Picture 1 (spheres, rainbow, N blue to C red):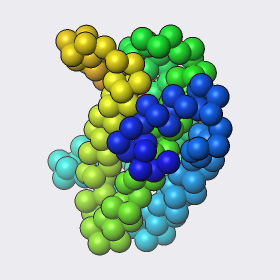
Picture 2: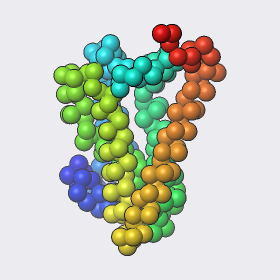
Picture 3: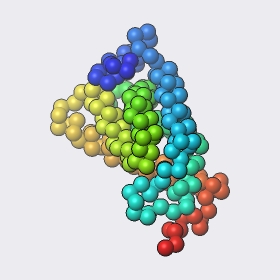
Length: 209
């Protein structure tokens, strides 16, 4: 499953949607493996690299107490935030790549496979960076998001074959929709944190110089 998802993801995802159940891991099993690996990563983030992790990873002094508290809460509820990306990716794919007329649940299957695969694929490097260069992990996470977008586009382009020009336009559409969805999740996280008392209005003020 790991090998074929990397080079021919349309075979794994297409086979499952078409009813083949024995050749590759099913999406929930693959997701379960990725959640286990992600749980170990978040354990390292909290207990090994916690002192080095900061939302102000560019060193520009742009963080505030709210940012750090929300990041700490994200680590606490990491599995939920991992899973909530699935409907975002599935909906973005449904709206941008759908030549094979997949319904929304079928796009969710594609999203589960894709998100799980990126998690499994990047796990070894993530562990190395957390242990060897923990102060660089937040910057590495940004590149991981770029990789996630790129691999999603690769998977969708392989599943729904368009002409080159149309594919490029749909790539831009998917990227735009994903960034809107990701930004929306960030705003939602801030609202929930505010409503539940994790942060206060004062926490959003920039630190005093």
